[in-house]
Length: 221
Ligand SMILES: [Mg+2]
Image (tube, rainbow, N blue to C red; front, side, top):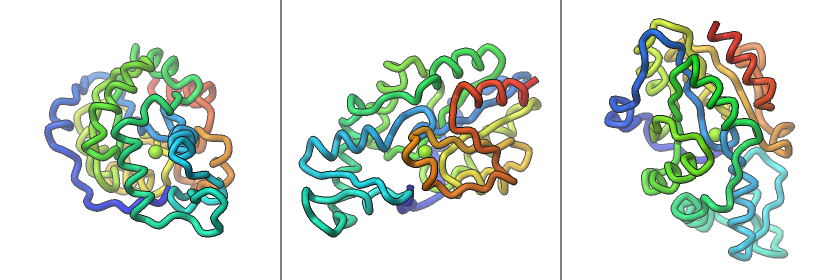
């Protein structure tokens, strides 16, 4: 989704505390639309607050309307809803089917780090959500493109690394900053799949964890 990003500085403390075994492969994985059905959860949340979502674009606020209105909500209203969702909307959001099982299985062979662009005020809610859904892995809160953080993490293993995200700018950023990392694109919400910009020549596109799981296993062995 298009959401303005400010800087490309991950919080160094998060990166430092993420444990990476230099003798194991590394999986760096996004949350929204990869481990979590973000759009469906955000839709429930905004509908509870009297808005409606008409999913016609690979975008966020441009799909949200006050009930019966022709024009989408403005950026400021969207930002308020978005901030509130990250603060308290975890209960509205379901995990992507198969994600937790795949990670549990992959954690037998690889280190796993969750790299998310959640706002800092959403850290606790996000950590609780991940734990509740069986995905309690080291969490790095990032801001901006993910290449610098992925490069930092991947430099700490001698083995294969992989990165999964739904957003092409993040995939391109990682490919540029950490070319040794294999990039996979996943778009968990079936409604967003046809809308999401893709570059399958450079980033393997697999939208289903039952297929992504064996592809990762193969890359790591
Ligand atoms: Mg995402």
